[in-house]
Image (tube, rainbow, N blue to C red; front, side):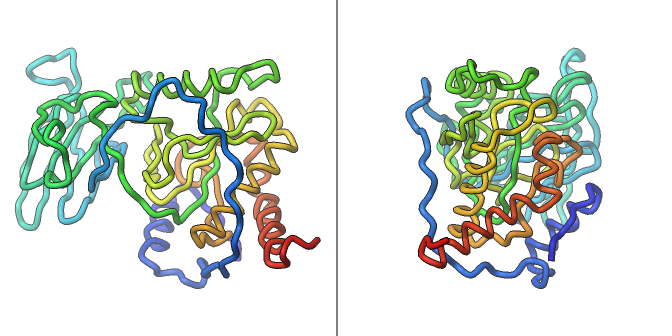
Amino acid sequence: MTLRFPLRSVPLLVGALTAGLVPACAPSVARVSLARPATITDWRSQPPLGYPARADRRNLPPGDTLRFGSLGIAVLAIGPDSAAPAQLAARLQLLLGAEREERDAPEGAAFNWRGYHVAVVAIGSPGELGAGLVSLEVAELASLPPEVANSSVAGGAGLRLRIPHEIRYVTLHHTGDAQPLRPEDDPIAKLRALQSWGAADRNWWDLPYHLLLDLDGRIYAGRDWHYMGETNTTYDPRGHLLISVIGNYQRQEPTPAQLSAIADIMAWAVAEFGVPLERIGGHYNYADTDCPGRYFIRYLEDGTFRRMVQERLDRARRGGRP
């Protein structure tokens, strides 16, 4: 059974899948052994940052709530900071059992409350990427190093948290560059630029994606897949293996090498993590976006990638025989 993801039904669908309420639509995958596709790992000019912690991070609009363990953090409103009107602040409601507390938290602030550390990493201004969203990070205080636990500021990429997760979905993105990727472009330079921009502009501790591809289908290791990826939209990337293709696939066609390499990654992930074929999708399935671009979306919508993955799994079960 192939699931389609109307945008507005995605939160309910994801919640139901996570809770195990729709087993008929998410059958377990018969395990098969597949080697992980070869990846290029020596492209970096700077190491990943951040600290592993029991934590979560979400981009929330007013009216939405981040739930982490027993804690709930609701974003009630966004407005000018009363102490510095040129700066934005979020009106937050903290919920723990029967306890309720409201407070204004300026962009870039951090505070401790009832055994938790809360950081307002960013608030998107009109016209900015992530406009109208509050980027919240919350962690159990006991899981944090002192430099984070004692900080009253959210800080930059160096203070971000690496959030462990287990892969349950395989999700395709593109980097969405302004221009298509050209054969003469240097993909390593683009990866380094993305890493630097993410750290400086988005406070990301590493690339937002776990695996990335160039025009020739070469695969580059991004963020450690043991940790949750990043998004500029509202979906929750926990549990998603994020594959991204360098370039803009609203404007350029994928190459055969890219299609083959993406299918190789997806097949490995399905085999390695037991991901059902129905959970192979694109960023557009979970957020209001055209990512990974129309020229990739068609291969997700018509089942091409699932068929290519199934072919690889079947071949592996036959011991590599055609």
